[in-house]
Structures are given as structure tokens and as C-alpha cells.
Image (cartoon, rainbow, N blue to C red):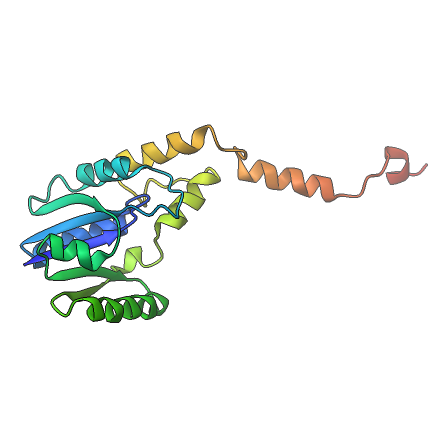
Length: 188
């Protein structure tokens, strides 16, 4: 049985990898399919994301990486897949994913959606969280594979306007102090 794990993967996280590994034990083949979405401005190109995923899943012989545009159901049919693999982190994910699964079922009754609950240690993790932390100079080494962390750090190195959030906070606090001359502070 072939499963498609679709997403933007911008960037791929350890949470995504956990799901891919678990899916690879359940299905004969898992195709990690990077969605080409012209309405979004991703951090990495589709080709870069595919390469990041390939490097991250090289140890999984039944995992392939591809990209697609358009409807996920159409792509799954083209790949002769029977399953769409999706991860659930919270109740809010479930509502969105269930709606999507029902919609996909109206497009093809031959494709099932299988939900895997995210492992506890990754229940908070998303690509957006990773980018937000990195954008402000925080460490993401514990959230993404090492080669992906390096790519992200390089991306933000030239864009980063705040090099040290603690220093910036201290500077803002200093600006909010009342401005007094030494004579006003310590009268004679």
C-alpha cells in the first residue's frame, strides 16, 4: 500500500520526520510530497526542500520524495496511492484535517486519510515556530535535522535585524526610563 504525506515542509522538522518514520513502518511506500503553492512565499525553494527531505530520510529505503501542484487527491491517484497520511498535534488540527479528509473523500472514494497523533515531544512543533525562533536568533538545533538547521541559520544570517534579543530588550527598557540629568536625580 502506498501512502502520500503531503505538505509544504518549509522547513522539514523533527515532528515531520517522526511521522515519516512511523508511516514507513505502516506502509509499503511513503511518498513525501512537497506542495508547490504559488500563493505562498516559502523560505526555501521546492528543490531545496526536496533535498532537505531526501537527506533526512536517506535511512528509510521505502520513502520517496517528490513535489506536486494542484489537488492532493489527483496527485495521489497519479501515484496509485491509497492513503493520505496526516499528523495531528491538537484538537484544532483535527478540525481542519477532518474537514479536508471529508472534502477529499468527495473527490475520490478510493483514497483514505490516515491520521497519526504526533509524538508528545513534537506536539508544539511546526515549521512556522522553527522559522520564528530562527528569525530572532534562537537555537533550532533541537527542532530540525542538523543540515536543515544550518540552511535556516544561513538564510537568516543576512536578514537578521536583531542579533541579540536580550540586548534589544535591555535597550528598550533603557529608553523607557525617565530622562533626568544628574542634578535632577541627586539634588544638593
